Image (cartoon, rainbow, N blue to C red; front, side):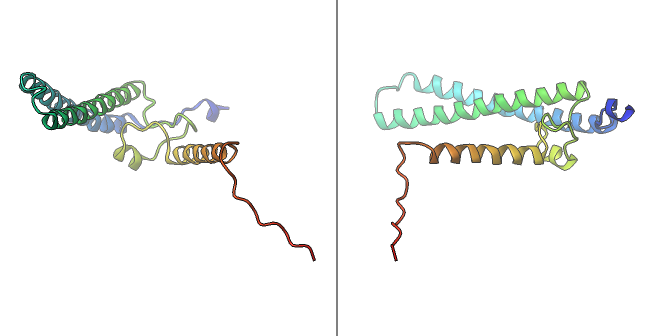
Length: 154
């Protein structure tokens, strides 16, 4: 009964090690996000006068802005994931798989500090998703099935 109530987690020292890694990543991510935002502001300020002059230039500027915006969105999401990881460290549940409840391998956490699933749980979920997608495609009445050759009578 004591084993059931006992929660497996990383030690406080290990959590402190993860916290240090995540804090560095947060600082790097914030720096990169600020740089992207600066580039977006610079492009929008410098091109507001020229907009409409040449459609090739406008298209290039719009592509650059879209790329920078997408990169900034990804950085914001990653920053939020890092902050969520810090919250899990504070709550001492960092490194516990949300699917299986088992500890996530330390090497996985070092490689992907924002992960919430063990490798086993992640691959199982991916496999199930692929099966579901394959099943949906083949059961679609609008998708023509390959015709099989009729059997010859003897």
